[in-house]
Image (tube, rainbow, N blue to C red; front, side, top):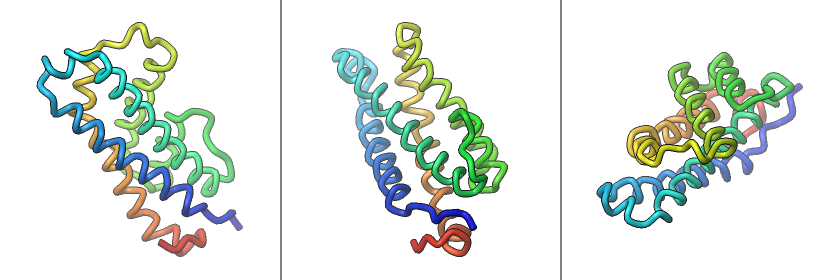
Length: 152
């Protein structure tokens, strides 16, 4: 039998994602000129996006460790595996893989980050994290409660 999902762990990461998405939306709603007038806006949004990826990956690895008895070796593999297990939709998994690639750029090649691209991601792709939370919540309600001892 698989070990039970740690409900509190998943719920805490979901709360982090929701809070950070709201923060990103506030910054992203600024006009370009106002956003770029203060470099702290850019650095804050970069960090918030990084935190969203990390929180989503934490949920992913936690669930996959329970479903497959081992977590995939990379975040990108994890999101694709979550899709293979029917937890999230394939299209969302692919979008999250792109978010992981952006996270890797922020962490490992930060000098190559395009400021305009950061704002574009904040405006056009932050809802991928909201979709992830929604699909994880749906899966928890439908499957995890029954199979993995989580009561939502």
